[in-house]
Image (cartoon, rainbow, N blue to C red):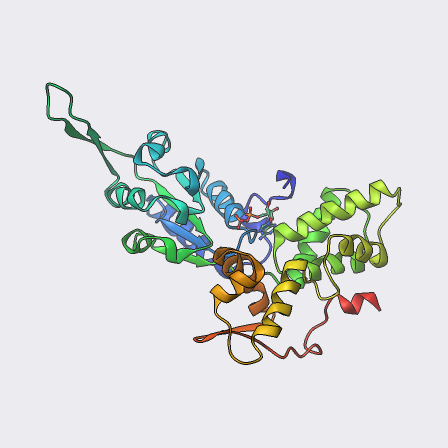
Length: 320
Ligand code: ADP
């Protein structure tokens, strides 16, 4: 995703007002106390803006940010280069922090609590080895995760500020798309942008991808501009149906419909029926279907919810 579309300060961020307002308080207090921001965790689905807000936070504080990915931190040694580059007050942002090896999460406890690093020098032939301690500058660890439950509890407890990202409303996505269509120089009607907003599962990253896709569609077809009908056709080409559901959502719902006739369905049954892993089902497919009221999770398993289609306008409304 082009950096051009990433807002770089709080005022340009659309939605997530509660989080931004809370962060403004934390930033103002840290500045007035001349102290470093407390460790902070963002939890929420992919593409909702965790990295965007972390970068904006660094800009607001006027400090350095280093970016690491949890998947690449499998040994203590992997975190050292980041720790060595820390400056007083700077941010270390770890995306997918739940993927940091559990032993490394435990190693980081004293690092983020006492700003102290213990390095064990292995024993040689002639000595017994030793532990050296290095004092680190006080810094702020910012984590982003889609699976908070995978963090070891003491590590999770060290994040004093926890922020839960929510899905965006269609109006928020529409506002974002209006700004981004000018940045990308796509000539598209408001109704066309509305089709994209409805199809984007409340997620800015998806909305921006669709916007780039309809831009490509416009260029490839030598169109002067894009109206609702052309946008609808372009979005349908991506496999998105009139309710904004993708092919995997549709498979999920049809399998659940068949299997849940007798009783609620467990996740493992869905995994076998759909040939998908548990993580994909629980983290990628279900949150949006639950949020939209298609399914419900009960203690006994998943059930299909009779959805009242009169509730809210869907993509179908744009086809008529
Ligand atoms: P995450 O880290 O949660 O996976 P990102 O921060 O990478 O999500 O967001 C994906 C893209 O969506 C960003 O590049 C940015 O263009 C856009 N985006 C995310 N949140 C917002 C927002 N609140 N306002 C405007 N654009 C946003």
